[in-house]
Image 1 (spheres, rainbow, N blue to C red):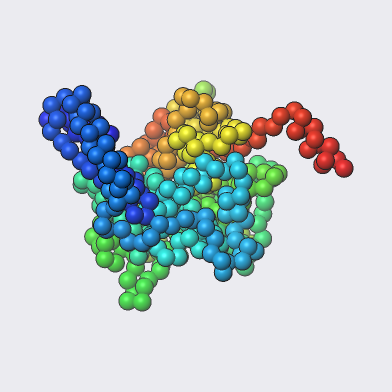
Image 2: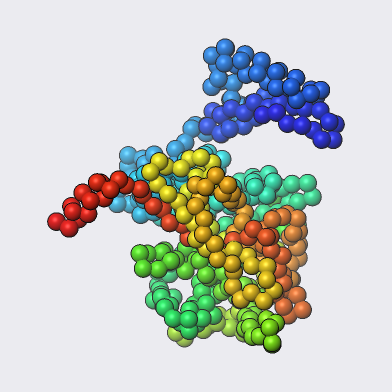
Length: 436
């Protein structure tokens, strides 16, 4: 790579190479070249010397690697096939998932070496949680943050003037109690009740679990080394029910339930003439089949130590597929089509703006951060700066109203169709085989 320093108006070159565990990192750097042409010539000379030495692998070694090369898709011999998570097997075995496999293999090298349990949990009952952590790491890096793995919380993110920690969690299927009986809403009324009570309880269980968790020394997350006296954030994703052949996963529309629970408020809308008017109503509690929980997570005791809650409905295999396709890792013979709702700037809009795109189109562009939403705690002891996650959608609750800062390219929700292309004769043959 050749780059220009706009401050000093000179040029530099950098050679990146894989280190001992497979991560692309800066292996050599030279600065202060007068012209781009001269920097390029010197870069070619330096690369030629590395190639002629025959020590390309050694050239990339940094001396600080913590583990040996790792493959998140290599299943240990002692792990039975029936123990593997069904989504892991789909990701590993489906040819059309090649883009996601490639991206995950690259990202895992940055997280897994410091976590000996990462691969086994990714392959088994921790698949959703580990995929969410991979997504968050990629998004934080795209926010231009230096990301460090901690024992707890999960991440420490830093940049000039920015320093905060993040604990990642997911909403999982309930294994008992009244919430185990999933309502599976079908009508608008059922969906409204689902978002008003059932989902706030699901989000509440995951969030209060992290709020109240303490280590053996009795320390909460914000009291531990690396977290003291700085913003602490919980990042949550909804994996409580997967999509199936008949309907999309609820994660595509549960974000409204999250903010209702966080701020203890809900909204209704109406038109006065041609102007959309939004009314806010306070919520005291959520009730489902006799179970009651108080609303307003940010008003709970000790919640002032949680600076914000991060949410995204995009930490899925589909996201990794699309990002892989944009990096030219698309699988031959497959199409990737994205359909969804993006931010609608019309002040009278009642819903997002519908879109559909072919991910393999040359002009298609996507970012890890487009679906990230940050809900700021109005009572935070250490507020999180908007600049810390610049480019995300930021929500604030002020003067009894939810106020938002939304980038023009923000995506509210989407799903991806993976299409396999077959020749007409192959289609006829497979159809006849299925009929017999």
